[in-house]
Image (tube, rainbow, N blue to C red):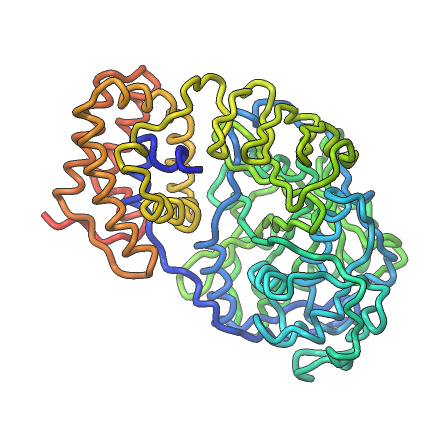
Amino acid sequence: MKRGIVCAVVGLFLAVVIAGNGWTGEAERAKVVSKKHTNTIMKLDAQTMLKWKEYYQNAPRVYIDRKMMQIPFKTSVNLLTHLQYTPSERDQGQCGDCWLWAGTGVMEIAHSVQNSVKDRLSIQYVNSCNTTSNGYACCGGNTGHVSNIYSTTGLAIPWSNTNASFQDGGRTCDNGSSLVSCSSIATSPNYGITSISDQVIETLNQDQATAIANIKAVLNQNKAIWFAFTLANDSDWQVFFDHWNNQSESDVFSYDSLSGHAYIDGEGGGHAILLVGYDDSGANPYWVMLNSWGTTTNRPNGLMRVAMNSNYNDYFTYEGSNYGMIEFWEIDVAFTGGTVTTTIGPNTTTTIPSSTTTIGNCPPSYPVDCGGGFCCPIDYPVCCNSIGGCCAQQYPVCCGDGYCYANAPDCTCPVEQALSGDDSKLDVLREMRDTRMRSTAKGQLLVDLYYEHAEEILKILSAHEVLMAHTAVVINRVVEKAMLLNTGQAVTIDQELSDSILEVADAIEADASPDLKMAIKLVKNGITTESIFRELGIPAKKK
C-alpha cells in the first residue's frame, strides 16, 4: 500500500494536521442491571463510558470508496441466511455479555460467507477463558475486547463442543467469574483465525444520506455490523424496554426521541446488537437487528427493526459535553481456509486470501478462479495475483501495491523513489493514516480529497523534478513529526514546516485542474487559519 500513502501532497497535509490520544487499553468493569430476565444492559459507570467513547473517537475508520458508492445499492439485504441460531437460546440472561453475542454473530456470518461453514460459535468459551482483555465477560465490553480476545486465542470454538454451550445466563458481573471452568471446555474441533480487527463505520457528524450509505456499503459486502447504543438514564431505558417487550418484530423503533438527555452515573448504560440487514423498499425503511434477549410472544425470532431515516447525530450529555448515542462497527475477521475482504481504496476492494485454496475450488461467494489458489468475487473479477487481490472491472490496472487504477501504465511512485524506498518511513506514514487520519470527521474528509485527486497530483510531481525533490524534503520532516505522534508524544506544528507545505501546495496548484485547485485551496485555508489544528486539538503553530 506504499503508493497510497506517499504519492500525493494531500497526504502530507493529513499527516501533520491529525493527532489524538490512543485508548489506554486498561481493563474496566461495567455493572449490569436486569429489569427483566431478557432486558439486561451494561450499566456503565461514567469513567468506563468515557473511556469507551474515547476508544470510538480514536479507532481507525472503515475506508469507504466514494466512487464505488455511485453504484446503486440493493433495496434489501438479509444476512440472517448465513447464521445458524435458535432464537430462544440466543439469550444472555442476566450476564452483561451482549457485546460478545453481537461480536460472535459478526464472526459467524463472516465464517459462512468466507468458507460456507454455517456453525454456531461458543459464547461460553470466552466467558470462561478470557483473562487477557476486560476480565469476566458478564462485566461488559466493546469491539476492542472482541478483537483482542480472538487475536490472542487465534481460534473460535463451536457451540456444540463439550461444555461450550452458553451456561452463564444466571451470572452477573458481581459474581466475578463463570460457572464453567476454562479447562472443561473442549477446544477440538476448532476454527482457526488468522486475523481480526475492528473499525468504526463513520456515521457521527455525517449527514443522514452519507451515514446510511456508509452502513449499506458494509452490509452489501456481506458483512454484518456490531451496533451499539448508549442511553442516558433509567427513563430512557424504560422506553426501549417497553418497545422490546410490547411491540412486534414488524414495528420500527427510533432513538431520536431519547436524544439530548443528561447521562446519570448509575442509571446510564449501553447495549450491543447484531445488525444483519435492511429494507428500504417501503415508505418506512429500516435496519434489521438481531438481539440477544431470547424471544417474546411478539418476537419469536428475537429481531427488531430500527428506523433508517433517523438522526445519526443523536447524543447524550455528560458534564457539559456531548457524546454520540449510537455506534456502528465493522469487525474484519479472516478464518483459516477463507478470505477476508477489506476496502483499502482508492478504487478497489481487495480480497486477501487467508490461506491458499485448491485451484478450481473457489467458494460460491468468490467464484472467479484466478489460479494459484486465489479467488475473487463476481463484482471484483479482475485478478491481481501479485498481492492475492481483486480489482473492479472499471479499475483494471493492478500495480501490486494494494490498489487498482483506471490507468497507471508504469505503476511507479516518484515520491516513494525520492524516499529511496525506505520501508521504515513508509510504515510510519501507514500507521499515521490508519490510526490517526481517520479518527475524526475532518480527517476523513481530507482522506477522501486525497484519494480523489491522488493520480493528478502524481502526474504534476512527476513532471517537475525540483518540486519532486522539495516534496521529498517536506515528507521527511512530516515523518519526524509522525513518529512522535505515533508514540503518543506531544507535537507542535512549527511555522517553518507549515510554510513548506504551503509552498508545495502553491506549486501543485499552479498546474492543477479546477477541481484539484478547489481542494488545495480548502486545505491551504485550513492550515493558514489554523482551523484544522483547532478542530483536531493540536497546539497552535509557533510563530
